[in-house]
Image 1 (cartoon, helix red, strand yellow):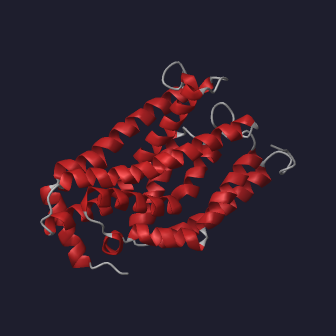
Image 2 (cartoon, rainbow, N blue to C red):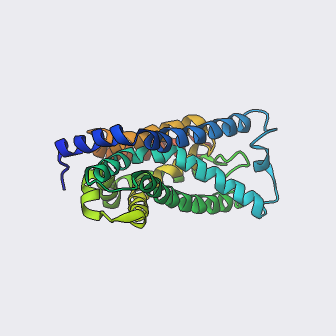
Length: 271
């Protein structure tokens, strides 16, 4: 369903006029705090490792250390993904104002909470995957691939998913927030929370494979985190975003081949 451009702009203007502090908190304040935390962690990881990142060098991954690892992923996903939900939050706020419904601010927080909850769930999966890869020595204690073969395999998985119909279908939904609201609108706080979860699931379907690239280049590599964040924004917002997914998939597949061919022994090394 195509978006109505004039109506979309009206909703955005209404949201910015009446809900500025809430939207600023959700789309600027929360991500900014998360980005500061990531920057501190990354600086310590590739620096002295005497501060925030020191716990990641432990050999005893008990419940507390796993919780910390999950928190790292959850904070990272919030920083990277919450800003990409800006059009939906803006249009939802404008629609609530236009309909004269009360409780706009709580509903915006509820929608954002539902969206972040989905990525918190993904962070559980990422934590489990990271520990599994580390246990079979695919990842080093620095959270980087142990061999070029491992990096190439991860790149190839992400590349192939970029070319699938499921990726395109989820990306189309992420790129049309107005149509999403028309189709899935639910009233009340519970409805806002459900909208956030549903949109988060589409976003997860769109971007989960891109997040795997963190395993290929270093989970706490700040340059890669920034690059992936920009990649997601381009896919979702740029007029050529749908093509970016396909071109990116081909580029990643080529990069996987290059990494494999450039590795010592041309891929004869095992994991």
